Image 1 (tube, rainbow, N blue to C red):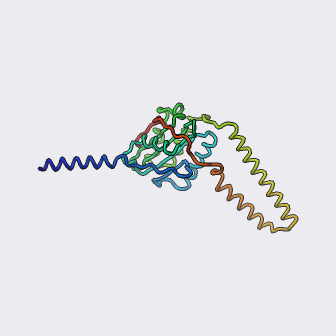
Image 2 (tube, rainbow, N blue to C red; image 1 turned 45 degrees about the horizontal axis):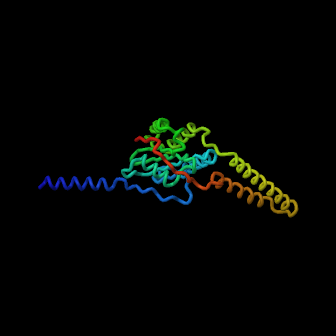
Length: 245
């Protein structure tokens, strides 16, 4: 009788263990996808902001989208499969180029996976991907998550170099943005002359309003300007690698 009970208990435990595996649900796609998604809360707001700025700027220059997702637990999922599924669901990487790269960290499981879209695979080979992982594993062991991600991103930059450079029309667009800013400054100078010289407006008040609005605009919109969010590609073929740390 005891053996029967033990057998039933073992079956129930195995059934329960299998039922909780693979229960990780990839979040729904947000309206605007930013490069860094920290669901485990291991990065400060400033660290997330710095990484976002760097990855957004890089995507504007090269069109390559490097997406970082940090979760508390994988809930039994394979990190490579989960990272690939995430990249496909959120369509990371530009359409027709499929040059998205997913960096997935699981804090509780102490696992990292880097998965590459079809377009990035010829350059981000499995061998080079594992070299990056091996380089940042000692940093992850010391719980320096920001430094580890930043180091990994820099290594990806070195490998891809000038790959996926945007076409000339994107540069023209940037020049047009510069032209519009210069025009705005000239307009402000003309208004400055008109109101101060002609109307005798209070100089200190004008300077305060002008510089406050100018600095506020630069602080909050520099990296976010003309950024519509990641997404558009999403074909991941399993190229990459993973490891414990």
